[in-house]
Length: 260
Image 1 (cartoon, rainbow, N blue to C red):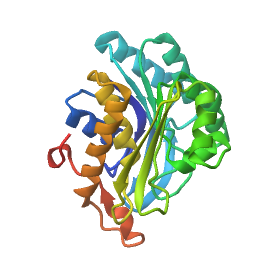
Image 2: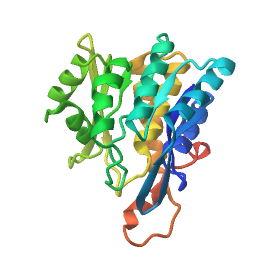
Image 3: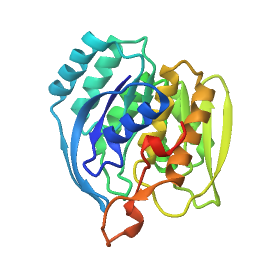
């Protein structure tokens, strides 16, 4: 499967998290970096978007050789890259597309400007098989507040499935809600772990995409990927020494430490 997303040099999120989650599921990740980031375990400093034509050429080179079966999208970095990716999807309409609409870093810094948000709303959502926003992202994309209203609006854009995660709620349990275009709905409740975690959204979306590539249906893939992600968080470790925001030191466990 092909992942297009940002590179996190601290190793907890982005393309590296994608590849770890995909490998743990028994699939194989092809990766194209759409944005370089300057960040550590404290948070994000700068984003360096890669040229959109360069991103497209990398993707075409991989498609000509390896024929991925699923496309996973993360941080795109620029509206031009988002437009280019929309063209890529149109060139391969048979591919399932899992979109993690990254609007902010784990530490809260904005990573998508108004132009990128516009491209997500008007071009990429309708081309996606599944989108995996957390609740703040779902609200920003839909201009709605309640999860059910957000999902209804996002499905109306053309997305076939919407998974709204509850990691940013203040509830005792994390509730993840899956909505389908044909009225399907499922909820999962997970014990909320202490601290904040870097890269959990990337890991979850990639774990789902890998299981779709391996032949699971959507509900099965979402259920299994949540279990993998929760186990990864439960076995997380501290990779940095930043003292400014110590909760941000959490990063995901390696695939060998967590069951798929």
